[in-house]
Image (cartoon, rainbow, N blue to C red):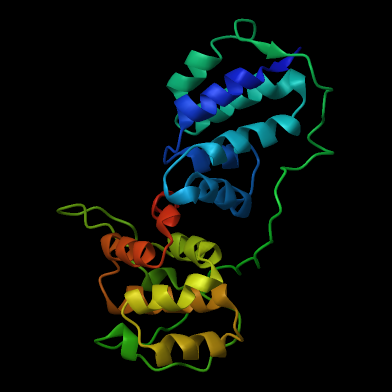
Amino acid sequence: MAGIDEKLLAKLGEEGLGNHDNVPKLGRELGFNQTQISLYIETNYSGGRVGTKGTVKLLFDWKKKTRKAEQVSTLRAALTMAGFEDLAEEYFPDSSSHPTDDSSPDLTSASSTPDLMVTATQPMPDLVSSTLPSSPNPGTAPVPDQTANPSVDPASVPSQSSGAGGMATITAKQIIFLSQSILPSCYNVFCTHLGFEFAIFDGVKSSKLNDIPAALVDILNRWAANTEGLLSDLDKALTAAGCTRLVYMYKGK
């Protein structure tokens, strides 16, 4: 069976998917890791405006590493699993009614990888219980003597809920995701907009041996424990720190 036609794939990326909130979920269904997906989404926000280049690149990189005979069924299933049932039906109603591409050799997924230069992030450890210090102001909490390995206490972080006015709060899984996704260059300004003083967040970073993901887990735990942990406040801090793309990504975690 021939592969998916490139013009159809480009149309799906540009007109069908665009920069929808579920594009990261589609990326996961297609086998990409979170670091790769973050780079694709970041490409959509490059140039000072929201575009679709990253989404299109994700689809074409996936096509390169997928056997032609499996492309239609795999993409159709991934679209459905990611919440794009209408697009799956529109673009791939059945295996014989869409344009195909016979111009390139068949590639196996076992020998190809997405065309991206990525840096692997340090995997975060399993969640373990820990006691978090509390104070009226998160920015004035003392810096405890901690190891470089971050920990998240699910009991100390409210479960995401939507109460009156949609007052959703941060979850432990979202803390892990953000700690792995926020760029080191954004650490200081992000912590500042969360309400922490420089001495606090710099001290946390030093106690974690400059391991930014570990420091962010600590910072976000403190923020959640000593404030209401509202996602609306977190969105403001992320936006002010130049991490707008993450506002559209972490809520599904």
